[in-house]
Length: 258
Image 1 (cartoon, rainbow, N blue to C red):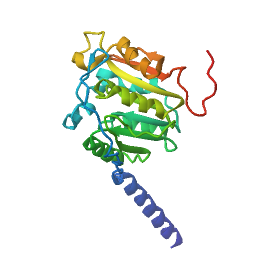
Image 2: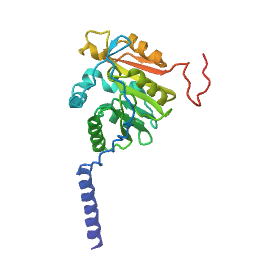
Image 3: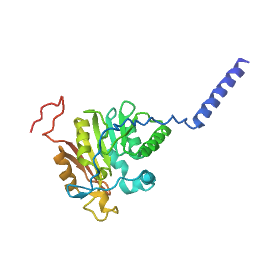
Image 4: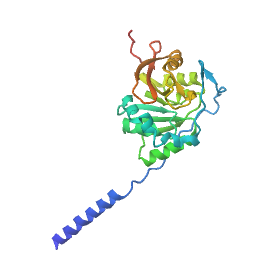
């Protein structure tokens, strides 16, 4: 009798375990989108040009499916881009102009549960899509934040890396945004720009949505940045790493040496 009861218990335990494995994971509720922008802040009229470059219009949220298109990995080698960033567990990073979260979710996996990803966009519709996708993946180390064209609302001196993938060329107020990003970086923090190569006519993207390395430097160096590195193996994009120039200081910075 005892043996039969033990066999029955073991069988029931195996059945429960099998059902648990087969059951789909229960999605967490969507992340809360931080929309506490300063509504009283005056936003100057959008610029049309910056340092000789025509500024592109921001992609509308109805174009979000293009960001997660099946062909994107094949065209841009997104996995290689992520590896080149060398994001470390526990870091605080920002996906600027995050859209519906194509890179945000991967960054959240890279920084792990002890890290944090600020997901910033100026379109609340994009952020709601991102929040739903993050919940479906069970990722809760993401903070979706509504920014403005002049303020990403990042905390000061708190971010290890700000990533802008095909986004910077759409900033309607580049000088204001770069100043805010610079203030958000830790002493050795990085701003990373991925932009379609403007020098390469074979890259099948409209010229308005491309940038050359020369143009990047012409715009970021006067804003207090310097080139800290480049990664040149992506199929279509430049990947350029910037840090605060030696003329910039942050509270608590160690003395800089030439």
